[in-house]
Image (tube, rainbow over all chains, first blue to last red; front, side):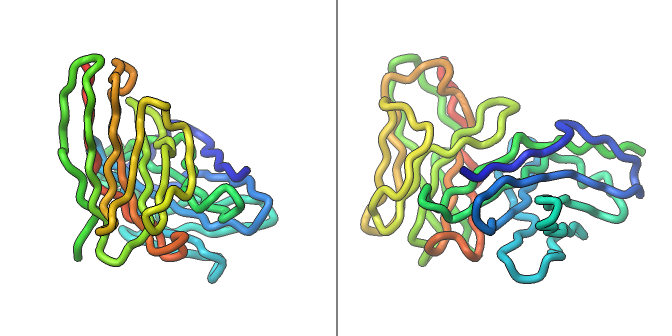
Length: 115
Length: 113
């Protein structure tokens, strides 16, 4: 079965600093990987997705993620944090196995941006 | 662009009552997924439908049922509600298996009192 593990349930950075949110996946087949952002009391918004094309994926709001098969990782980064980036971030995987095509989410990382 | 529409946005029910949540996918999307997100939790997959047939089943209680209709909208029926059913219920839609991504609705917040 496919799964993702997000290291760090809470991450705090200063405004203007690098954002690094970690995600490692476990999958027996090449996965499709996603990052979603959730603002308080709102739905899930897609930031970016990896679907076996380029390993470096650029998303919205200046975020990007790099698929590293050797490390089974798909970490999310942003060069310079903004106050508006404060939210919960979820990594998700869809390995398109016999278990169907649902997304399986990680436990989420709450990003706090401080002045 | 049209998004995934969920109704109602908020719902308050008493224990043992029933609730029906509706989801209208993006036009031409043929697959619908339901997720439950408890307070401070990650979204948990409940059930999905492809072309009006159930395609996958997750941790959906037997008290819950769902279906996808001919116009591709979906309804999640919840009976004998329990306090623990209080959560945010998301619907998502995709074209086929989701190669182009999944679009989530804003969710229905169900509160059972």
